[in-house]
Image (cartoon, rainbow, N blue to C red; front, top):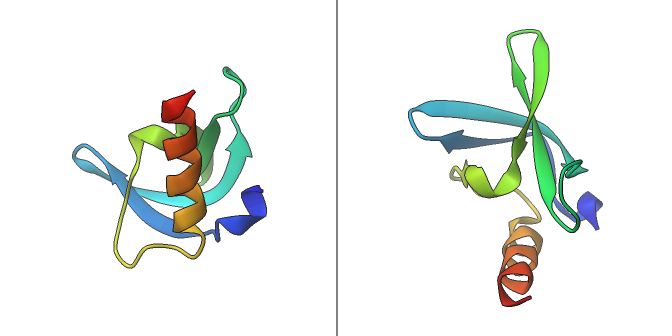
Length: 74
């Protein structure tokens, strides 16, 4: 499923741009995603729900939207 979302892409969190280089299953919760962001030469994970996608939207963004919609109904 994660291969549906094309990386890398740009997004943002409040007051900061985010360069997403990968998508992984969240290590802290079931059925959630983390984005792997690159900052300088280091990589960090950030909860996918906390990132606002930037235009142009990445390929596979509808998969992400449908996943979050499904999770909100559970």
